View 1 (tube, rainbow over the protein chains, first blue to last red):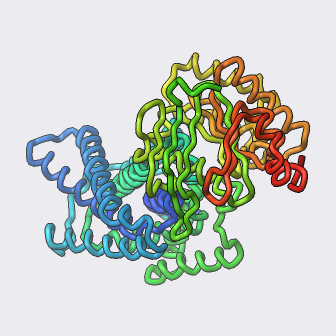
View 2 (view 1 turned 180 degrees about the vertical axis):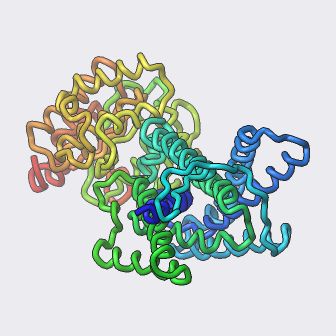
View 3 (view 1 turned 45 degrees about the horizontal axis):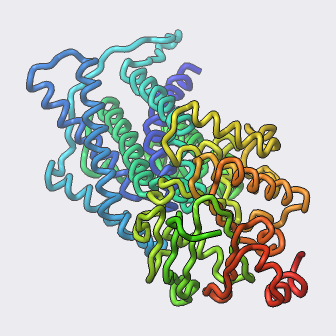
Length: 305
Length: 247
């Protein structure tokens, strides 16, 4: 039981990271109907920006951890958002009137560009950082000597995710920008007839998706203590799987799918074999899609963005 | 009506096409401030294309559209909307997964205005269409056809338009609801001086409502005149009233 509880905690933390990335896939799919295959690499860029910012802050002698975290988070979100915006402008917008597959192919190209750019600019080796957030709590200790641990970094990851999701949900449901975004998703022509700048709204969608991916990148760096140029690939595929599992186009679905993939992977690693955790995650995806082709929450009446 | 004043909307030699199919072949049309103008014609004559091309969709291949003396031919669709030209388009195009209140809010967002102004517009719309009041928290997609039509017109009115374009407001509606909607348009024109361009297949209704009318055939304006006068012409009666569809 204690062992299960521990894996549950680990799974939720991993699922939060997947969920944050998955929102970017589902948002972009909702508004322009394409899968942004470069999104995983945007997450990787977020991790690198976080690493660079962190090293700069350390080298100028800043030691207050909450301040470091806040600055790292904000800088990474801002710079990564700029990347997301640029990718859309350079690689997708010129192809919007083209055939359906064109932007998707372009996205695969952008994915290679971003990961190779990082490899050339930052080197191919894995970049480790010392633990930034240390310590934690022991929730329960069994007689057999197994202790359920909740580390501070896990708390930071989950709390940050919840706070950002709350802000994001409010943005989509209650603000003018959120209304514009939902209008563009449902009927772009009508949105334009009502004075909505569709191009700008699409740009902003990429910006927000990239900013959330950057948060995931920062959390990944904090949690695993390393980044490398190739980490966007598998994380991106997993988050995409999460978005499809939850129902592509559905925001709550993306988060739910992220949690599901995180938990499946962690529990499978804990009880079966670590080597086959990816196989487990993708198998569950296939099984769910056979029985629920639109994903867990992807029914038409579900609120989508 | 005299044409001494500058028209609010002037269309000159407008040509527009979908791919290779030319839908508008050189259209001239004027709307004076405070006027209701009806555009009638058979299915596929190009009426809806004309409505949409005022918003640049499709964009004009030749000719000019001026609104209030300003050339708007090359403006982006959303920029044209922000000049307070509102459209209740063909097929209504209600946002199905937004509530009725949000749909109306989308209309209000098109033009800047204080909360008080928005509240006043909302009250006006809900007075015209009390049915919408009961439906405010319901999703647009769950409304009946007549309610969706009211919502589409209401949404257009929320931007306090200077020019309102109505595309087939009576399509598929029960006669009673059609009458309600036409009465609402007449009220808005008389009380608020709202300028309206209305596209209709129901020539009888539209020409009785309008000050002036235009007849469109195959992408060209073939006839123009005062509404009631057009209604008396034998060729109109033959084509659009007696032998035609609904009366």
